[in-house]
Length: 196
Image (cartoon, rainbow, N blue to C red):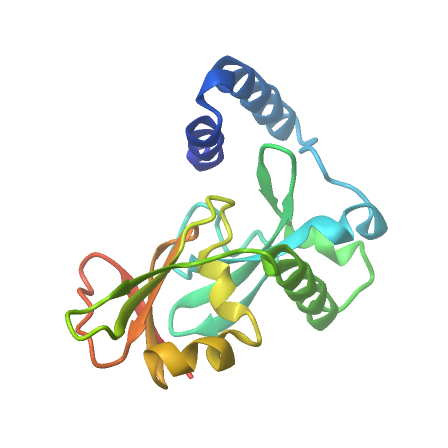
């Protein structure tokens, strides 16, 4: 099974390049099927493209038993992936074991890369009828918006707008919505967790 999320994201951002994106995606899919995913290599070759991703523990795509990951909160895991030009390749556990680094080093590298990638992003905010911020939404379309809740300074930067603690709705790896704890979260449509 192959995810179409990256193809959809690229096609949405650059609709005139749809044919190119589909052809490139198909080539990368064939490479992955052959066991040669783009970006697979030595740690020093890919370390600047390793990023964290939030996934549910019960997911089968990717199967957590096969990929490098760390437990995070509730049934959420932090998976590690190599960001390629048009695909995101989860790091197989067996491949990670050849790198001679610790899981803490992998996590630190991924988090530092996410911090660097997130320096210039903006978020969309919505206000309630009293003028208080009722929702902050990350929507960069880069596939890492859910993981941005891991940013070390996020709480400090947003607590003046949302209060502390605030809640996070994470419907999938590419989206996150942050809202004041006082608001009710529809748990049937999103995964919720309290960020402290």
